[in-house]
Length: 390
Ligand SMILES: *[C@@H]1O[C@H](CO)[C@@H](O)[C@H](O)[C@H]1NC(C)=O
Ligand SMILES: *[C@@H]1O[C@H](CO)[C@@H](O)[C@H](O)[C@H]1NC(C)=O
Ligand SMILES: *[C@@H]1O[C@H](CO)[C@@H](O)[C@H](O)[C@H]1NC(C)=O
Ligand SMILES: *[C@@H]1O[C@H](CO)[C@@H](O)[C@H](O)[C@H]1NC(C)=O
Image: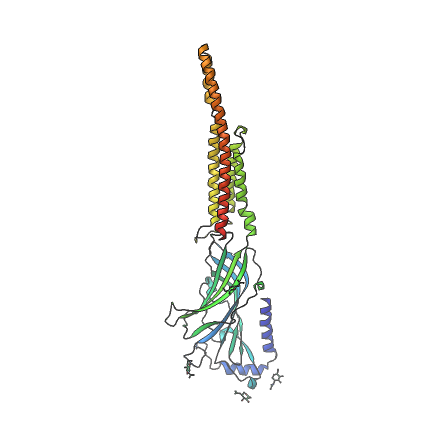
């Protein structure tokens, strides 16, 4: 961009540097005496004015995901031929003249998807250059804000297509048509500053006639900015902690029920999940254009965490289900005859067997739940990755 500014300045300097001031004054008088800038600059009213366009992305400021807004620094190169601004170059000894943009006819160009003041091309006292054959070169540029509808369901592996659309407000193709300055345009992607969160993968231009509004149609120009999210930060800081937490949560099924730590591990991991979700909530893209698969994955993991608590409680209940037998025994023991005691001993043996069975069952259930949850965790993570990458 610096290069372009230098060229513009250099040209302005050259244009003034080698010119006789008097000749310039005379030429300006000659050109603008009868010039009316609201009249289309053509002699033959049945021929439209061809406006050649080219856009440059200088710098991607930010992509506001919640509002679907792209803020960027853009420059445009716009040229056309003004048939009323021609002169004999050997008569005035001047081949190029620079004038302020408000002195001449300007093409009818609006940034259709621009927001606020971005609907008008950013001009700010930018000079135009006119050559003796009526050829006008104009480089408006500056900050632009355009609407860009985002599709974030594949976060953080998403790509976006943002467009800067230029159209005349009123002029039909009878008066004005657009053409690309260079076809196909080859743009150096290294020209603009790198953005922290997005990588520009392709820049392309399209021109066609939009026949929707007018019988003659309206010229339409699109500058397409293809963006890809830089994923490393999001994977390390937002995605990976979730499977890690769920793996830790699995460990609660490995802790023996007799240790008494089972429940506290489950609950503290569930709480960390809840806290984690509140923390990353600001980082996740929020748009109404669809659900984000990562959000669904997060919700699944929260559900699994909740079920882990319930199932651990069930396992603990089965494992420690021996108290009722014990208490019954204590009460009865004192008032028993020898006969009854023999029965009771048998009974007790039965009970001990039952208790052992329960404990074995609880341990087996723990193992089964560990495997089932592990499979569920892996499957949900893989499904999330597959959905986000296709
Ligand atoms: C035309 O301009 C050039 C460059 O400034 C100068 O050298 C030359 O003498 C000029 N010719 C006439 C006829 O004024
Ligand atoms: C004006 O342009 C039209 C279409 O190109 C052409 O047919 C016509 O002869 C032109 N008229 C003049 C006076 O040049
Ligand atoms: C341009 O001006 C020169 C010098 O005044 C003259 O000789 C020449 O015929 C002019 N050319 C045109 C196309 O009027
Ligand atoms: C960029 O997009 C254009 C138009 O869709 C395509 O022709 C070109 O091959 C793409 N370039 C790259 C590097 O993908």
